[in-house]
Image (tube, rainbow, N blue to C red; front, side, top):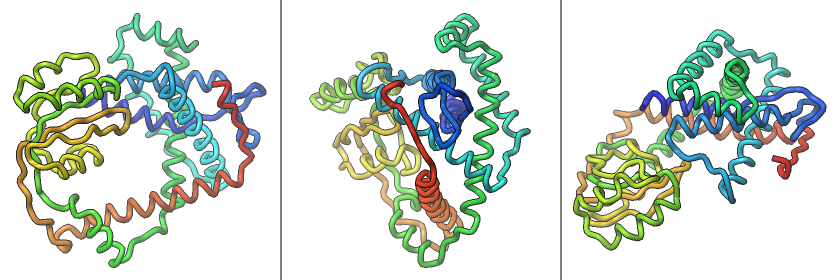
Length: 314
């Protein structure tokens, strides 16, 4: 299962990229357009990503509209970045990209039986050969964008003062404190809200988790055991560490999933001294600063382009 989740993350990265040239389009950046066919490919990869992570893909309502807008924005960003890469003569590693695409195709054919995959591809006017070609194309584009990131941010550095500021602002990352908690992981907010209403009226006994473990939309129900701050998604980690012993956390939604925890123990420890984790602090602080620098670069790149998008046609 962990393999499929890793592959799902990889596909989600590929969803950031993709562009083509045609006369009929849903969106356009300068002279490069995103066509209906390209859009169907984006939706197909999104569906596969959700399936591999065993999370229902939104198909109606506000959640679906937001998903479509985010997917189109990702496509637009990829077009802009690929144009920037071309102007800077940045190239990707096609060999690594092709191997990545092969791994993805293997994971997809392993996950779905032949009939199910055939039905899915038919729904999006695709076949195995077109899917494989799409994965190769996206993987190669993704490699180019990765190399662009490396090129654009290679001169970014952090000072000792910036390292100290990062350390003091992220002390939870640099200690071995643990929280002992039970809880739930939900596939969607609707299920989470319904279960939350019931469990808050019950005690913390195991029957709470037995009652809901087989319910649709419940991905996990039980004991998380000792949880380090870095073991779970940051918003849920904050909720767990902020809750007192004997308390439920608020319902936390992040990255398409929802979390609810009950804290039954804590083992607090002092943070590790900065000098003992200086390399890790430097790595994390530099990654954050590079990310901020790159986001500004992307925003500036958009400002230079003529972007025309029709969200109403998605």
